[in-house]
Image (cartoon, helix red, strand yellow):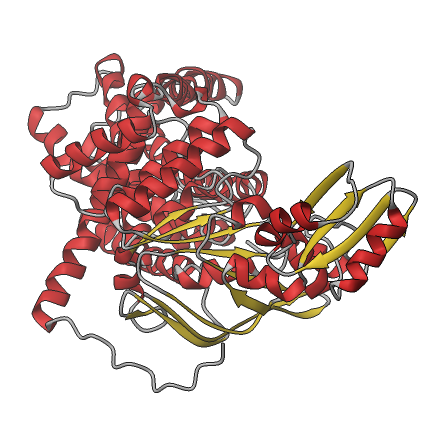
Length: 284
Length: 321
């Protein structure tokens, strides 16, 4: 049984063939994984409805309540003056923030599919396929961000009710922006999910992360005039820049510049994707 | 086809390290059915995990279909198909979608994929259920679908980790029919693990694993020969005459009871007819039992295959995935 022979030389496939074939294998892997995520999203109508109703409640109930109730109760006349040009009221102000919230929650929680896949054993089918671990991470991230983008698009249906005029051009510009923001947020979720075993654990940790991210992003209130410690946190929060970019495109109001927003989200996204890939590389 | 060289795997646990696979070396020929036999936690699944690149060996390596599992995992993965011990289907997709996912993942051209999927669905008799969600399938149907999936991309080597675990006897027979059919029609090398003795009999060669070590490797017949000879149990009213006659032929009984004599011979099937014809006394019954792989395992390890209450084995099986 013991083997004393010299190890046979390894067959070396032609280098060109090797590169193209591995590259194509990985590309096919990314596409396959992406397709499954999107297809399953499309099939899960209750999930789509749930993920639309929740932000709608935020907008309608919380937005109206805060926008109308607080000024009255604390002695500020509502609509005394417009906050900024193009922002006639509070509801309009938070609308892009609520779109960002939808992206955040959909993105991060789409990453739970990894833990689900591991639980039902399906992850092994993917892990043993001839594709690299990076392809798995990228496929999952692209799938999750596409789903979040679609969910974000559904939020655009509320625009007419809020008297926000979206031209076709704006809508077209929004699609890549939604995808861009979703990509970095999904990568964050995947980076966490790749290292976690239980769905409950993931949900708890992600709530710890997403809620402060949401509250500190300027989605619900303007970010200048805050106490110093909070300003620091807001500035460090990558979602702040996503919200700012969305607000800039949707209602034409911004505190940073779109270019800076994109840069920060991009750097954050690449870093998170790196973490996600590393999480998969060390996966056994 | 499979050349395993000093494969070794250590797991770190909170209580220290556990050697799940201990310096295992063997080879498997092209087109053969090779079986790994051993109790739960013996290291079978860990070995398969390393061979199909899901786990990294702590040391050692293996060459599959000419590719090194450590240095060329990508090409190893392209060469193998795998049917896992635990279910690994997406239950929210239909049977056909599961197969399509697999075909796409292995980059099969569309036409070829459709043809292979149709053929495999036919083989595992799931054509009429192909558009049903897998969550509505029975355990046997799921297992059959997994076997079909493992074959879609024409693997050179098919790994079956406990392929019939938890299935009813009828389904087990069916699955074995498929496995033999595959080996014949597709010339697939089949590597399986089992802890059912009856199933190990289907294999050309059997490796016996225990506590992470390969403690025996031979054909089923060869393994049985190591345990002992064929055993004959005879009942007769003339026990004294019978023992005397046995002694005259140079055979000593293992045990003698009232009306019953037990002794061992080589090649019992050839021995019996002439013995019955020539014996100078009347027999009531005569019965030949051959050693089973269960006996082999018992002899090699001092334990039965399905024995429980083995703390080391239990601790290991907990670490297997």
